[in-house]
Image (cartoon, rainbow, N blue to C red):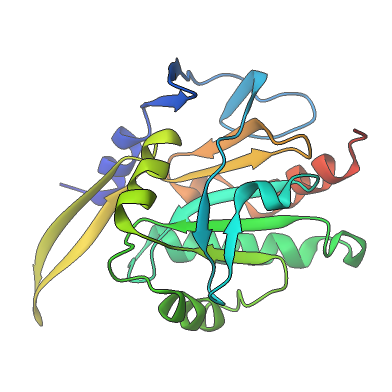
Length: 213
């Protein structure tokens, strides 16, 4: 099955927050923020604690008071994950330097068995994403899998046969959640990352950074 088709199908799922199931439907983006899904009213982001690429334990709530772009990737990904990371890097570089230290890009692995902090750190450097406001998070597979479920990230391991032999890939739905300074999810990009641009990501981070609490 075409992996892009799988990713689009996997994106049509429910979000579980605080034990309640909220079915998200596609809607028009808000006037200010861009996205394929708008959360109206906004919902509180679910907190979690993992280890970043530098071996530092961090909670998502550590970034409360800053706009957060939260996405899900893995280092061995052959296609969509490098696109998500590279577009995030481009977006970051588009932002005025005044926003440095006032925003956070958080990437949670969908392959925690392989993605150790050391592996994620090397990958971030190779991707040009070893940036001050970029955090690549991993942890115990049981803990990380709970985070996927909370954030409606569908994950399925599969194997393919290549000329070099059998290998595996992780099919997963693609998301970037935009969380405001009050720790509320406002909009989301979902579906194939070709549908979003670095300009869109930069726009949302800029708008959220300028909002008054």
